[in-house]
Image 1 (cartoon, rainbow, N blue to C red):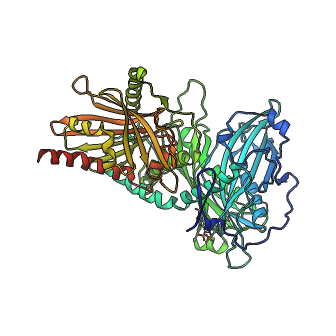
Image 2: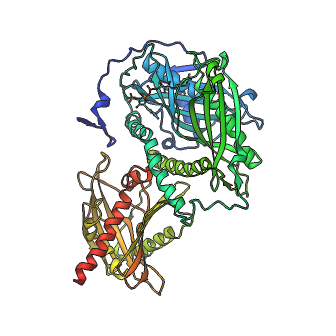
Image 3: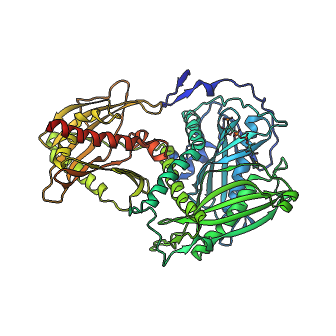
Length: 628
Ligand SMILES: CCCC(=O)SCCNC(=O)CCNC(=O)[C@H](O)C(C)(C)COP(=O)(O)OP(=O)(O)OC[C@H]1O[C@@H](n2cnc3c(N)ncnc32)[C@H](O)[C@@H]1OP(=O)(O)O
């Protein structure tokens, strides 16, 4: 398939760029409070400059630069002053109301692109960074990032402004998928999004296909990971973070949190096409979930995020909607509530034959009061269904974490330090110390555990780390000798194309240049690493092989390779006896390393496990070769 490269390094399939003969857009009438903008910024540039952005532009690059003069694809904007009727009992904007606004504005952007009525198919994870209060102003902007065949991705950006302070804060960025609502049985083919003027628009356009991939693989990913977690649960592993929070004496049964609530869909609940308004359904779902969460906590936790969910089928005026909510699991500082929506028309109601129209998972946190460590009661399950939901919540947390890091596209400050032989002692110390600190982190969550390989992940604010443990039937010294010679790594790690020694400072510090193959249609990458190796000082200490990026003048950027960086990686090798050891590999994931571990994190690849097995075989085989 022909591909087209973009400036930002992404490659697009021409499949997506073809000019589909879809419906021709027609001018649409919008409610008076909506502004439709083409190619210009809704905020005057001089005013825009006055607004102090509390979040960086990268945190929410959805709508591109306001100062772009060339025509941009159409975006739609809504401004709402938060009134008491929009708020909860504490004066905070109700999340349900916000979801209604978001769905409306996204639908209008979708309809503007499609030139016809559209329906919400799904909404990706939403992370709420802030909430609004009565008197503040919410600004909600949306724009179609990309049209696929029959579906399109709409980006939504919500910010809140306190008019007295002239401060604008990001509330959330979300992505919805819409399809055209056909008059007959035929699906509607959409025309592609054109006029991608700014680099930001091009980036969002290409990232949209990555996000789509995650959406479409979501169910498969979920089942694969759930299988792994069932194995973990049945294996009774004592790894922190996995099924270790069930203390039968203090844990609360999830059944105690069950909520069931019914709504009759009336004309004010319908959207402008006569179907139950998606935003209204979300608002009702949020209401049921909040009751379940509050029951568990005995207070009012706030909604922090909504997991990706899908509108499976329509409902309309006259339907009865039954909302069933239950707490699925609690984590260190969050709880997950699942909500299921079933619809009945009159006949279905009498026959008790519901239609499952939606399911969503809402994540709550306690409001942080200074000095307080938020703690949720532990929960336990008493039914098989409860166990499935309990484990599923762990899997979804893991997928959310992966999606967050994969899609964040954060720019990092340079991580490499200049290599300077005269400063070798300090750099070597720093390298080893960073790895030791990383290895000392608590609460690693098991991701997969097989006979001899275990993968763990650790997330702390924005920091994501992976750990791979291998049991190897060879001496720790032998494993150390082979792993500390990085030129041998291409023999077992297929993420290494080549590795050359650049400079050897002494026995303990060496600089290497590594070339890595392209992955997932990205570019080939190269790294310059300082390797520091240390033998144990006393019995029980591990052997250490620490790696971090450095810059050296003798290895300038190489054409065809994207120079990438690693901040802290390496091996700790613990002796378990004369002929066996435990090799622990650690990596603090940077943007340069992420493409190589993204599949693993998101659950569609087992490359870390495969590489670890290859490493084990290499270390053991080499011993056999040496012996005979
Ligand atoms: C005013 C605000 C708007 C509203 O209030 S709308 C009211 C709330 N929404 C609804 O009632 C919609 C209920 N759902 C439905 O009726 C049907 O699911 C709906 C939307 C017609 C789609 O049905 P189908 O056509 O059978 O779906 P399909 O499997 O053929 O897929 C169609 C396109 O969607 C894509 N898709 C499937 N699963 C997805 C997912 N999880 N996330 C994102 N996209 C997904 C799928 O790839 C296809 O797109 P494409 O053709 O490849 O471009």
